Amino acid sequence: MFNYEFLWALLVVLILISGFFSSSETGMMSINRYRLRNEVRKGDRRAKRVAMLLSRPDRLLGVILLGNTFANILASAIATILAVHYFGESGLIFSTIVLTIIVLIFAETAPKTMAALYPRRVAFFASNTLKILLKVLYPLVWVINITANAILKLFRINVATLQHEPLSVDEFRTLVSESTGKINANYQSMLLRILDLEGVTVENIMVPRADVCAIDLHD
Image (tube, rainbow, N blue to C red; front, side, top):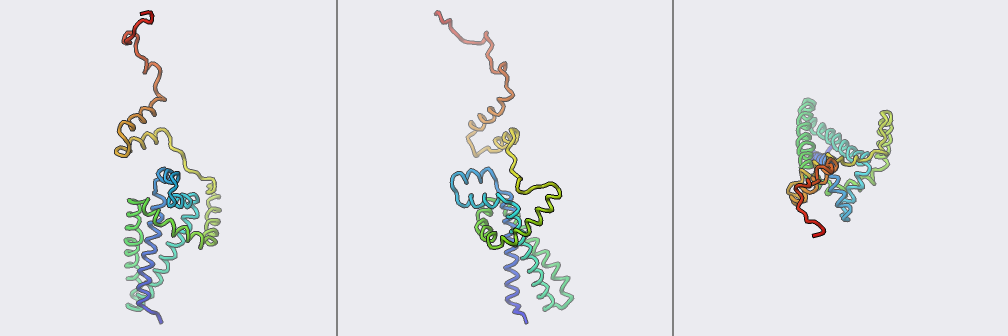
């Protein structure tokens, strides 16, 4: 009734697909937004594509979770068919345990860890596929988003008005402090001193008259 060799191959493909969506989610959400904006200003097409997808995170997450959920559920169904074929009904528990371990390792933990370490590479790699899938699956994604956003509105969360918060002075100071090795040390020190200017008074920068080296203008 079933081509079991094909089902084994399809199971492997589905696990890989699930891993792709898992890594895409982590990579997209972990990418450095400020570096991304800088690359967008420089005209990088991949950066523009990622920025476009991130402009509506509800739609992006909708298509990612839709693909990931579909792949995992179909993989579970195929694993059940294979378990029943080879081990009978007693194989259902075995297949559930084995598939859970495989999914956790190869479709969740490993892909997400890789994406957390290299978010830019993963996001750029996945962006074109996600853009195509978003266009193809848009009606279904739209229905899912409308429903989810309606639920969020019950908690007074409006997805359409959410914006990224700008950096505060303290956050920018931390960012500059942690950029050691990426910018010149003198520039780094200068930027940090500029940030401290708001707390500097005239008294702090004045030179006492007794310490001033000067000549009389009449001389």
